[in-house]
Image (cartoon, rainbow, N blue to C red):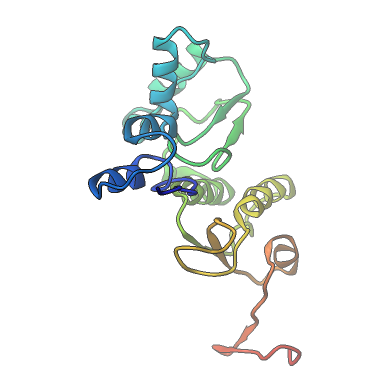
Length: 208
């Protein structure tokens, strides 16, 4: 009997469940279909609504829809929802990539290349978190952000920063984050292990 004590993509989205079924191994928990539906927030809402369960108002936006016509997406959101709204990846973890949006004014015709440095940086971090990778590499992730945005980004990164080992099992069951920065405040907020590099070489502890 297999106990799939796994969280996130590949662990609770039907992937490992399908592998166990192909291998003919019994396991506990939801099956392939229920796991896949439970991981996908859009399909989960459809299933809930189909069984008469109350579902909060929502709008599903696919990447291609935003790329082809941002104004149409903005019009749809404004017509169906009330602000503030919360943007969340459909298949990421419980709180990864969640962003509060109070106003869409000025965003309807904006392309990614037209974002400011801070906006582009927030988008990049959100997209990285939404993918929920086993190892996340961050290079100066908050240097272009204002103080409030920096605190929010550090909070999101801190939520997932529970491991310092790279491998299929980190002991904590949480993915690892490798942070490259020159900002001591960023180190203090996010790091639980620090390695100093000078002239391409690791500086031995106590010699910096």
